[in-house]
Length: 464
Image (cartoon, rainbow, N blue to C red; front, side):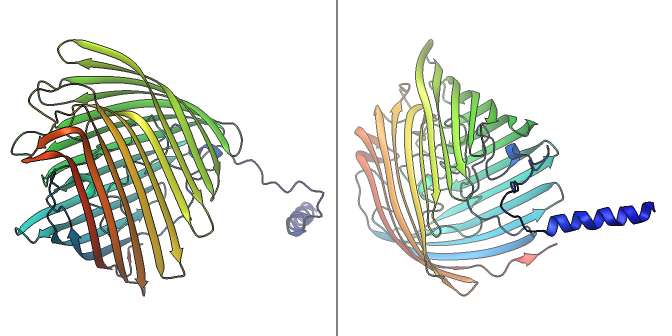
């Protein structure tokens, strides 16, 4: 009898699940349970005080694989020496190889990318080494997750070198996924990497940024976030002119879901900027930001935050000041196109020109595919950097500089393994007064680069 009743109950339950709704029932899905499916841990709307951006693109296939790639390009550069006040047109050939690993485990994911190659300058003949390594590691538990990211690069002329001559092969992790606009929340400036906003001279420079981001859910609607990071910029300048720097960051925040689309959070951060030269001293920064986000899954991501910042300088005695910091990020996706806009106001390391700078930066990117085999990318960028402290023997003698860039890339996919591309890139660094840096003098460093190239990326090799 009991067995008969049990079978009848199961049949009634299955019938109820398969019966189509009549329009009167409440068809909304049930509230997710507390754990990995909690809304506050969703990758489509992560905590606003964390460092992850809401996901608008479709997730990639959850398969483990390795993927190699090779890119060869030829460029015409109007200022290949990256010098102030000079124009010297010459050709530059670049060869880049990439190796990517994507590995999924039951409760963790691992992404590793290596980029390596060289830039070959024609007149005079020179070979510059290009190296970059990056990885992302994510581990999850029932009520939270931790993400460790690192991006290392060794390039001859800073941020203009990787990712601007038609893009780079691979995922792009090693080329600066933790750069401006690459991440989501956090205090302004704490997730901007080594802050290389502009460069002068073909001087080898080493930069590394490591960030640990932890999310601990308190309930399906609220979470605590913690982040710690280190970044450095070291310039192999024989004249010892450019300013090396280290940056340490620690921050904590609280996020709360107001509704399915809206979040509110508050975050506090402490930063320490160190400059090896004795005249540079140290800069202590404390920041509090109130943050708000509005996200529509697969279509819109909007993050805004602002708050007070307290800065303490240690150069010939203490100098304290209050200022404002803020961040605005908008990502919008149409059925076939996407647009990303980022504005940030913060204290940067100074990009080697200054021992600390008050920085405002804005970036705009747009992508649109044409048909099934053509892709169009474009971007604009601008930053204003004001010197925080005067140095006698190091850095630029100017009080501020502006940096701007613009570029377009057109890619043609040929089959599944080849891409052909053409690209144009413009950049300019403008100081308020003439300066002398690494053997060149002037107020402007301006470059126009035209590139064509081919990329080979064979079918990924599964390692499941």
